[in-house]
Amino acid sequence: MSIAELDQTARSILIENDQGGYTVPTKGLYPYQWNWDSVFVALGFATFDQDRAWREIEMLFEGQWHDGMVPHILFRKDDPSYFPGPSVWGTSGGQIPSSGHSQPPVAATVIRDLVEADTSGKSEDRAAALFPNLMAWHRWFLAYRDPEGEGLLAVIHPWESGRDNLPDWDDALRAVEVKDIGPYERKDTSHVDPAMRPHKEDYDRYLSIMAACRKVGWDPAEVARTCPFFVADPGVTFIFLRACRDLLVLAERLGKDTDADEIRGWITRLERGAKILWQDNLQAHVALDRRSGKHTNGISSASFLALYAGLADQQTLTALCGHFDRISDKVRYLMPSYDPDHESYEPLRYWRGPVWAMINYMIARGFAEIGDGVRADKLRRDTASLIETNGFAEYFSPETGAGAGGGTFSWTAAIWLTWASPTRVKQAA
Ligand code: GLC
Image 1 (cartoon, rainbow, N blue to C red):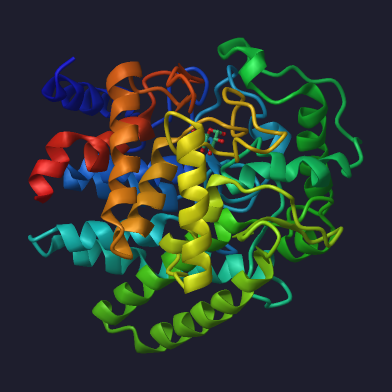
Image 2 (cartoon, protein in one colour):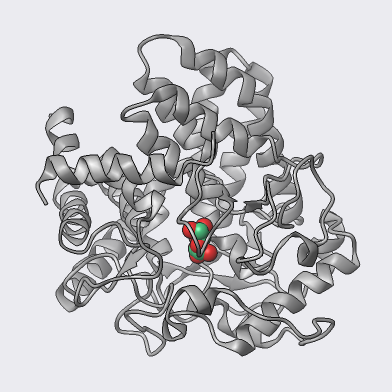
């Protein structure tokens, strides 16, 4: 396929997956609105329909809970082909049936991008309308995922990290007692090869965590206190820190001085907290189980997001460049979701090795912003060639490039349009 044809296919995927204002990640496997998927999708839409881009994010925020949380899935209509659906979650926090936890908060960053890319001036009003929702969501994260005020965010479920099946969750998940789940039938393994999906023992525990949160009525303070899974995640923490910096720029632009002061306090708190995730023996920021007090022993693609979060001190920078080059020598395509030198690495099992386009995009942005165009461009070229050769898959093998998981995937199409496509590079030049 030529580049022009790929651009056209990417646009068609977004249009095909559009459900009337919001977009499903892919038909079949993921038939609802997912939080961070939608926000990346907005970037893709913005390359050809700015109004539609805003609509995507506005519809996501229609599902915001009264306590400020923006859920990871909105179940606008019941679809029996997906499990676990709304009745298993048993939530009642907002206007739209939803899951009970959140996902990485990329929205403030993308909203800033949309505002800055728009020359018509119309975007600023839409950003202003969403600004209080963003503030409420960010406050919620700090109150209930960092209850001691240390400056690092925990996830209460592997799915809240957006990197669902990462080896970092293994030990904490194993410590979750399997209870209150009853018989159930998974649907994911009927859409995708079971060898690429989580094991049954993991699924039992995913559901046990949900049962424990249901028991406390999804009350966020109670969830933070009692949830059997509570793991500080460099992925969510760095994405959030980045989002706070972008939210600050929006606050200043919109003249929200008091909010801007509040956000500055968050940034200081998070810059301090990130240090707790640093492990000298690994030379990286890694996950920390808040219940057992143990750090994980592996490096994931999220460790590289330190730069995207604006943490580019000399120690971090030298360490990450070293890891980057070591991993580059080891695999054909960057960035594997888990360190290929680690024993838990599996190139095709979901989040234990495969490459995701939107993670590459964020890592590359971090490198580009510190002036490392070479590493940023390597990430872009790898992403482009994965898509050119293997299509708009959910994820790819870092070794062979084979596409896996769901096909005609919305965020892969969006990242192509907004960053990976050579057309985009030409426009930016
Ligand atoms: C998987 C991914 C998650 C994503 C969802 C929809 O659950 O791990 O990050 O949001 O699929 O694409």
